[in-house]
Length: 171
Image 1 (cartoon, rainbow, N blue to C red):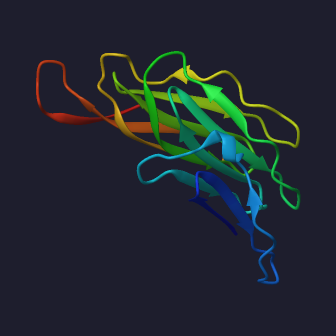
Image 2 (cartoon, helix red, strand yellow):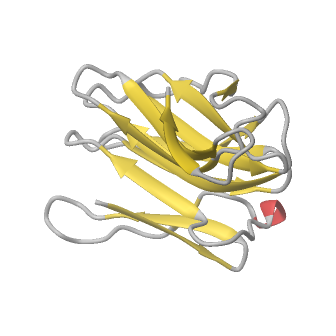
């Protein structure tokens, strides 16, 4: 198991071994990053093999994530800059059975959903973030899930153009 939390502007994580003991706390975001966002500020995903992804957001257009291969250590966090948007919020992480990771987050204003993919294995990097929702969607509260074959689906709440009705959208 992996537990991650935000304290004093720093994202920390701890790993629980199969024997049930917890290892030392590992800072994933340096103090200079000063992560300070609304709840939920951090998200964790882990597959059955023990590959894990911890994700968070900070500042304008920035999502960050740290990958941990099974039985390995957390890698240096990778900052991902969204191509547009404002304050980054609501990070969500998913990881498939192979260790491929998908990270999504929302930026506002305008509210847009971005996603980034990272292939499995130690030392790999996230690809450049992609705009997942359309700029005019008014997209909020993203969620991400992956299936056993590694396909990801990103869902969010959007607003119908010219209407106050909320709709669920996905890609």
